[in-house]
Length: 387
Image (cartoon, rainbow, N blue to C red):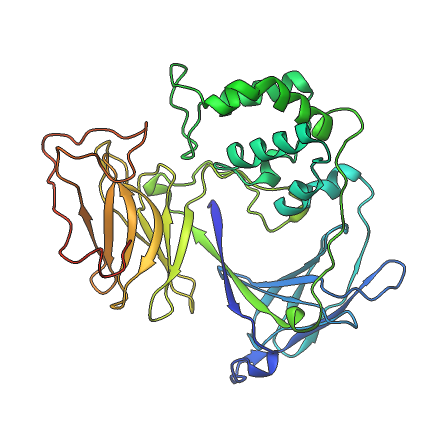
């Protein structure tokens, strides 16, 4: 079954403040070192129990030691990774307290080392010493990172002609990532600067020597290294048509590079008053407008508002009101304001009157079919802090 991931920083407190040990819970710890014997601090170590959709991660301390909070007993897949090093993994049966040590080897291939980098380090490495380079860097940042992260756009190399072909496509693709057809009006900034931008990117990420200067980033230390966080798999139901042909790169192996935005479900996230995780889905799909994740079990539930084209209405942004309900931008065919009543799980859609422009009007907006019901915005919505 295909899967995606959404991330929540579950706990950034010292481990001494973790949940008390339950009868069946066990402790997992170990040490991470390099092949040269150096103790590696700030290394990310992750553990996932077989049959579970929940991954727990921690960092190593100054001595290269890591300590997980109490985990339910069972068989776990455990892996460790750090920028510049190969990922190492193993399997442990956590029927009792266990240690799992890892020795990490440095990555020799510079392209694989580069592909591990997060987007902010790639962008920081782009040249900007001259006025022309600084302009191209700003154009790239403002126009080429709406659909994908910078680390996705820069993880592969193209010559100037190749980058120009990429720009040919992306200058007409909106932030939804959906190709609107060859007659769509191109982004005028990319159209005007296409040749210069393609040349700039080819110097940075082309077949020759790169103009990028990669700076290393210190790994987490001290209090920052005491964080514990959780990843939840979004188990995708083939009956909804979501993710059935999705890229197997789920983002957990950094050396594989950044996965595509297309096919992913989560766009924006928020917590309910009871700790439930909610997310909007802004990619076209047949099954989900708002998703919810039970943080204790990892169970996923999809809530759908129908769109005029037979798909689920896409959603964007999440704001929680005092009652715990969630408000968001929604597009069932004509962009509008959406509200999720978290108690009843009912999605309500509030449209502007037909003679007005829809909320967030853009080139991708479609008129509502004549059979659609237009609902006036709720009284006091603006004063209630929805906007």
